Image (cartoon, rainbow, N blue to C red; front, side, top):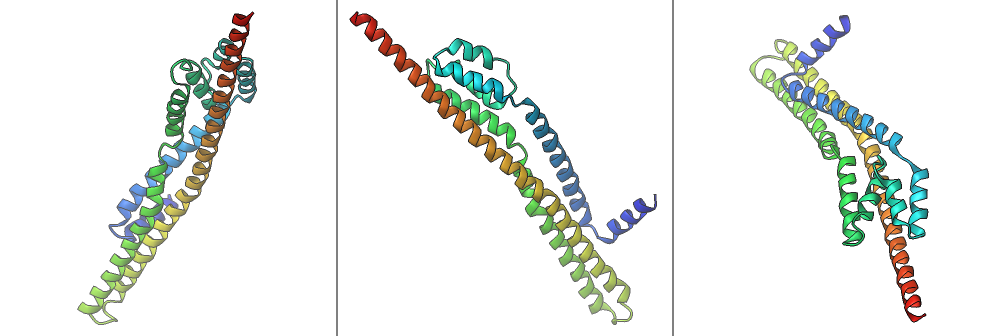
Amino acid sequence: MMLANILVKYFEAGGPIMWPILITAIVAVAVVGERIVWWAREARKRDPATLEKIFAALENGDFKEAARLSKDSEDPVIRMIWHGINHHHASLQGALQVAAGAELQKAGRFLTVMDTLVTLAPLLGLLGTVAGIFRTFIALGDQSVEGAMGQITGGIGEALIATMCGLAIAIFALIPFNYFSRKLAQLEFELQSAATNVEVMVQAAKQRGYETQVVRQED
């Protein structure tokens, strides 16, 4: 209860700019929490053993087995491969790109919001600083230093509190933002590598099938 009273006291001392800073803080906590939960769930969905079996099936030209292994998988890389396999007669590369884009869009969700928060929070803190200093100069202009001492102290306190809160929110959002950006880049690399492997294996399997058909016709 005492801690809550102290927080409320400092919040009020920070001036009106503390309300948008509070909203920014709530959004930052919500977004970071949602992304932590999402990536934790995605980590449990990864299935490298099945991915290796799919590559082996594709290398042998067994598209039906590869489709069977990849069907209903929750692994994002395997989901992309399943989408590509089911469209390999039409446009394999296009199907893989569409599926990879969908996976990256889900993985990169809210990154723009976090990037905005990292920039916005310090700016709000700076605005609070300017407002507090402005309030101090107004007090100095209207009264003597002795008479305006309370307002001067309040203005300086408002500036410091707003700046501290803005920087704290930016630091809180910056570290997860960089971490999730790295995770997104890693997933993009895995999707691109898998897509390249699938294209090469499918083309090789089709070429082997064509050569076998030519040999049979010559016989």
